[in-house]
Amino acid sequence: MPSFNPPVLSDHALQQLLAEDVPFGDLTSESLAITAKFGNIRFFARDPMHVCGVEEAVRMFQLCGAEAEAHVASGAEAAPETLLLEAHGSAGALHQGWKTAQTLMEWCGGIASSAAAIVAAARRGDPNAIVAGTRKNVPGNRRLVVKAFKAGGAVMHRNGLSETLLIFAEHRLFLGDETPEETLARLRRQCPEKRVVVEVATPKEALTWAEADVLQLEKFTAEQVAETVAALTARGSQAVVGAAGGINARNAEDYARAGARLLVTTAPHLAPPRDVQVRFVSNTPI
Image (cartoon, rainbow, N blue to C red):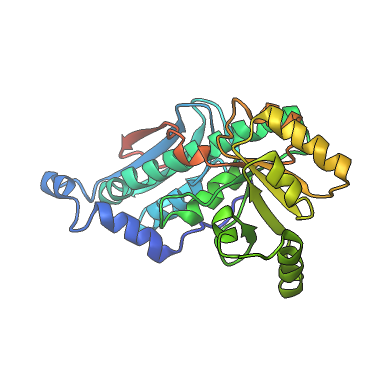
């Protein structure tokens, strides 16, 4: 039996999602007078996918008053026709949970599957490459996005502004005449437990900030990454090199092979959902 983690959303948050779809009851089911009839619902993978959100979907059905069980944990690979979850209870409860639970799993599954494809490509270029997801999620969805990236084998680049030191060119505009060496020394005194990450846009900037802990090469080609890595090595820099901007499953292998230890990507945020098929059966207990 797979190992299941608790939902990342609270019952209150899940109830809000349900209430958005059923704010004043289910008019169709109530008008047909079927809400008290018994049945079950099963979710199947229609597409090959990395599963994500199944725990939240199960809890949604439970909050609607149905009994529900997951058959595959978030993070698992599922072939078409894999049974993901099933629930049984009143038709009213099943219809209340149906679309919200299905859509959540499809959306999370799309992100997780895209992240997994990028991880697989990166690991072909370097078995030790790490894929990190950006924080460019639709506001309000970060908990689910983080879960989906992790389900695909990726990590998060940063979960917010409060936890990491990442110097952009937009920060450097306000530093006046302070040198890179002075900036790095000041940050290390102030935040000794943090690594200092600097985003650069050209190989020249990378060499200027060669003493940073991590250099994030923004929109470099794979060839430019390889050249920059060689130049940094010749200089004796110990900086971890990351590539960002346009990283996806088609080019991740090239970037990893070029020497980017960290691949920072937004692509999974824009991934199409993975199709989850729903099948109802009336008057049939599990």
